[in-house]
View 1 (cartoon, helix red, strand yellow):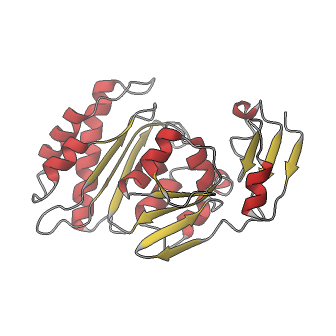
View 2: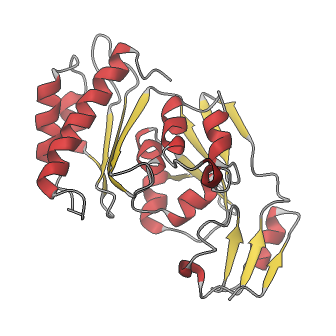
Length: 263
């Protein structure tokens, strides 16, 4: 049960106050108001720390940890795929509460933002760390450090996701990106999430696509479906998710190449 909320005015003070396992940083508070946080007794509010800025620097977009999802959706500086992923939280009320830091800290299995961040080579800046942490390393380690910001490359990227209804948990998310596609694909990233805990960069697919002209959709579908073995859920079988992952990846890749999903 929450017994106190502390309001530090500096990052160093916030880090110092989070001294035990029953303390947590408070941004939007969406998951801290659920049963997942029953063991917590202390919240450290981030509202006074100025961590909500969104800016472009060195050909990367930097999004502060306390930036709300709706602010991300509305920010022209943010790559289109990141805005699209943030908008998949369909309730505007929730988008006005949830923060980028909360999304990363919780690292929910059905997140649509995290596959996009992986596709865009995101780096997470943490308090007390000299160098940013690559997003895949961050998700694997789930460090408890205070998240300051996340930065993403300004590369073409697209996201596709499937859920039974607009408010249902997602069953599948696929993100693709590349640096260029003419005359050949370069720096290709293909990320697939079964929204049940498996979130993968499909390296075999990336190697097959790298340095080649854009293949026909059917070939992309075959390669992605062969490389991805998702877990089933109540809404979709593994076989259906494999098939759909190929379709979504091919659609996203061709849409990007044609400029339909340009950043």
